[in-house]
Amino acid sequence: MLKQRIITALLLLPFALGGFFLLDGALFALFIGAIVALGAWEWARLAGLTAQVQRIAFAVLVALLLLALYRLPALAPWVLLLAVLWWAVATLLVLSYPSSSRYWSSVPAKLLIGLLILLPAWQGLVLFKLWPEANWLILAVMVLVWGADIGAYFAGRRFGKRKLAPQVSPGKSWEGVYGGLLTTLLICLGVAIYRDWSPVSLMLGLLGTALVVLISVVGDLTESMFKRQSGVKDSSSLLPGHGGVLDRIDSLTAAIPVFAALLWLAGWGAL
Image 1 (cartoon, rainbow, N blue to C red):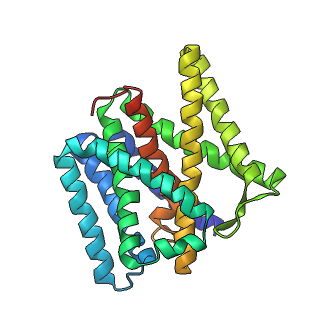
Image 2 (tube, one colour):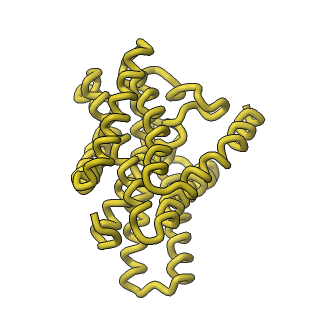
Image 3 (cartoon, rainbow, N blue to C red):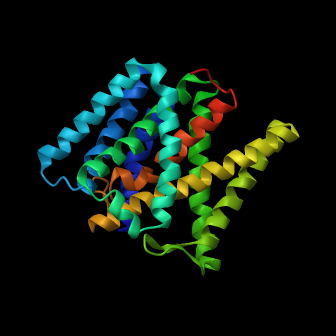
């Protein structure tokens, strides 16, 4: 399994890095759209669509909606607003699972939730490319999520005792969350020192980091919740040794739109 994971990662890494950081404009939107469409195909399975034609149809629907969003950039603020509202609701659903499943267990509800998860993530990345320091923004949100994962892993293994959401993901602990949060706050502090941020900017940066990291945990738990409800371990087997696309981007689907919304509120880019 480890060998398979390493081979898959080595094959995908140049492709992923080139797509994220070398492409711009329509080509970047198309590249991210392809990833999101694959995620939609996987999500359709979690939503209860078993027929291949149904899953493909949902992926096509998502692709068409992405095209509409690309052609109608004025909708971007509303997409981000919906994302922020959704992830607030998702937090409550995760914390109250399994009783919360009665609100979203129908196929139409799960398909709608898939749209609320996938479309804003694409929108956030497209906005980053239009804003100052575009590639650095993409790298920043990825570093926050990866840093949180690494910190949570080691802190959880060493200190983990109190279960975070045992009904959703028994392996995660509150100590892991604290470890991931501390890791990313230290990263933010390092960037602030390097770039000579003002005290106000530092405080806002630390607060924003905490919010993005905490919501990334919700993104991870949300996909785990739907997988548990569906009785599957991975969203698909598209990535040998890694599971599916959603298994690799679940935290990012939450972190990206919230990060974009915070930057927008801070006046980073014009929408």
